[in-house]
Length: 343
Image (cartoon, rainbow, N blue to C red; front, side, top):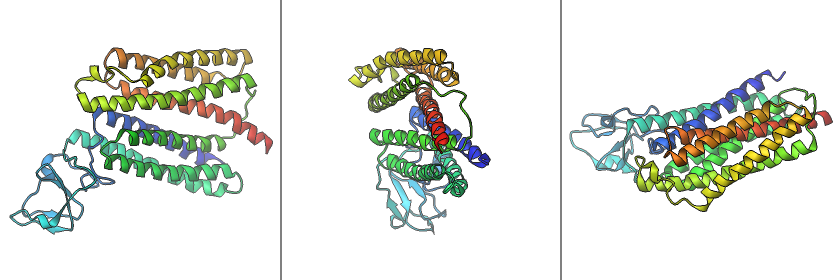
């Protein structure tokens, strides 16, 4: 009965996590402006692979919206035309969203893949919403959160546009990340609500309280981590990608709080693990949580003491979103199960 919903929530979740991983890779490689316009890339649906494709050429057909780089400036074709032997500025308009006018094929295709995964996740959520319509009366929570997922992915796409238009303003990148977590939460609600299961034993009040505390700490750590990443972004702009040893030089207070709070996170989750064993309830979630936290700590140590090894930053972000997802899924299983029993 829930087969289609389960299939498409699974696909949607996988794609959302791939988008998060791709977005982190974009930031790690400095590819955020690989496509300086939106939703196309240099005015094309399939981006260029060579700089020559963005140069003005005589006797060439340019379509409206195509972009060229001329004198270190982005120019947009104002209409479809065929160029003559001489450059005619009347057919071109300057791109006014920002003044970034560089082409790097690797950066362009990394950003393009990120956008492609975003589009695929949007299509998956649209299909999910279609299957949710019949549940509007039977189980409205499925329809409501499917609708929120659809609205969320549309808003996320708009946020992506503002990130590019702002030339990667750190605050807008942070909002983009927080919206990804909210979207992840919406889809998780649909998945749990559409998965009939029975818990052999509901966790005790102490376990639930500890779980809520650990989830709250995760959110605090995410917010602090975003502040640290904003600081690192500023340092990257200052020092460049070739000098990672300076990215955390003289960090802000948020870094030290973020690092110290990880000790409390480990301690409370270890306490939660002991309570789970004592209450003899399913251990799979807390085991996964502890494994992810262990990976987060190791990556954090590597970034600080070993100058951001390759892929450490995106993996750190990806594990943080996995931790968020596991904890929220566990919370939803407990609470939506109790909701189902009350119906």
